[in-house]
Amino acid sequence: MKKISYSKDADALLIELSNESIAYAEEEGAVILHYSHNDKLVLVEILDFRQLMSQEAITTLLAS
Image (cartoon, rainbow, N blue to C red; front, side, top):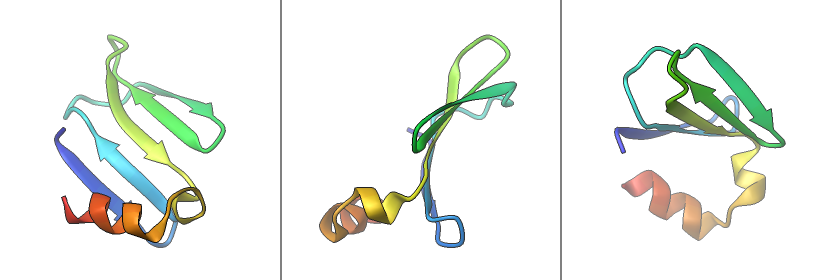
């Protein structure tokens, strides 16, 4: 994994898997999957993150 970050403003967890440019995205409920031109998964965005995870899980993920 390249990078995990959290946006307090959007309450979204961002998991960056690649540095490739994003060509398109697909939304599956609270998860948005961002893909490159060659259909490689580049970024996973989890919306409403604090509602989906326990405080312990949030602390563990953001400490990585």
